[in-house]
Image 1 (cartoon, rainbow, N blue to C red):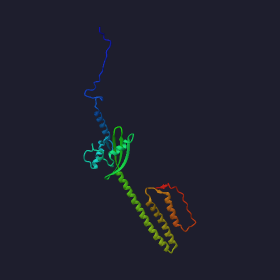
Image 2 (tube, helix red, strand yellow):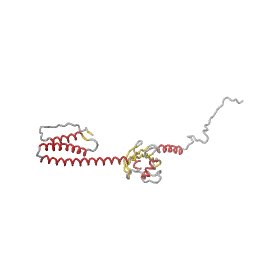
Image 3 (cartoon, rainbow, N blue to C red):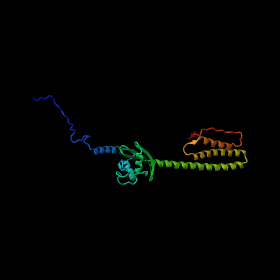
Image 4 (cartoon, rainbow, N blue to C red):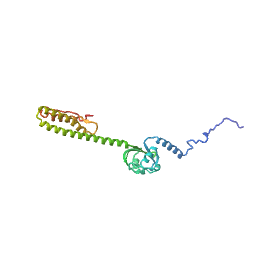
Amino acid sequence: MDKTIGVLIVETDAGTPGMATSNDLKPSTIMSAEEEAQNFFVDRLSENVLIFDGDGYLITANEEAKQLYKKLGYQDEIIGLFYDNLTLDYYTFDYIKFRAERSSSNWFFDVETHYLQYYFTIKYSWIKNKQRLVVIIQDTTEVKKREEELVLKAVAIREIHHRVKNNLQSIVSLLKIQERRAQSDETKKVLHDSISRIMTIASTHELLSKQVDSYTSLKQTLTTVIHNFHHMFGNFRDIEIFMHVDDSIYVT
């Protein structure tokens, strides 16, 4: 006679109707979701970001990068283009991949380049396990232009100081001629004092005409002052001046 001694319950997860679980997704679908998340993240970066596959073809570019290449003359879609057609620094994909594969891990390097009238800093990252090349392009054109403008202004300012110094030295030469021709001792003294003052001013402009940045060597400044002092009081042979100054001290 059959008897019931227990109940075995077997449960099956039916899930939500119409919703696939992760085990149901095909690998291509999972990859598509991963790439969608990647694109979502990349699009929110302020830099120009390009991602190439292992064969050198562009698979991802954020909106910033697309706008940059439109500015550079690429009017068509850049997704799918080969790296060598997009390079801004004239490196080929084969060269980059050759260097990257020699590394045992992820590989990185930066380069500065000039393309057309633009300046860029380009950062390369080779993701070894994904076989992906990530390129981040920073447009440094405005920074370079400001640097060039500052250099030109500095050169112009030094030239102005140089010309002022030359003009003051010409005035000193004329005053010395008048000093030698003067008959009155009082007139000679006044002219001598004027020469001393003008030479001091000329020395300042001479220093400013030689300095490269906003700092001037203290030793160089004092050397000029001592030279002028000897020139003004050359008749006083018993005066000796000694200077001990650290070369690393600068004044602004």
